[in-house]
Amino acid sequence: MKGDKEHWTRVADQWIAWARLPAHDAFWVYREGLTRFIGEGSGRALEVGCGEGRVARELKALGYRD
Image 1 (spheres, rainbow, N blue to C red):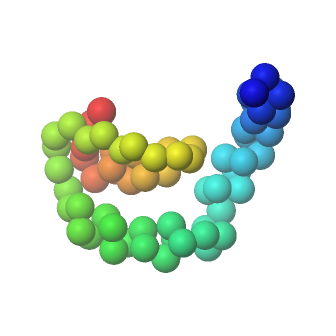
Image 2: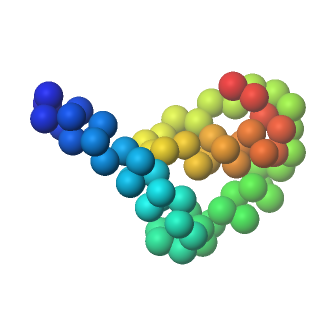
C-alpha cells in the first residue's frame, strides 16, 4: 500500500485536472439534473464519495455547508 500512497501523491494534481474536464465521464451528463433535484439549501451536507470533490463543490455552490 505504501506504493499506492506515493503514486497518488505524485499524480494527484494531474488526476484532479483530468476529473474537472467537462464531458469525460457521466458526472457531466447528470450534473444539472442532480443540482435541480437537490435544490438550494443552507443546512449541513455530507457527500460520501470517492473523487476529488466535485459533488461537494456543487453542494457548496447550492448553499450547503459541511
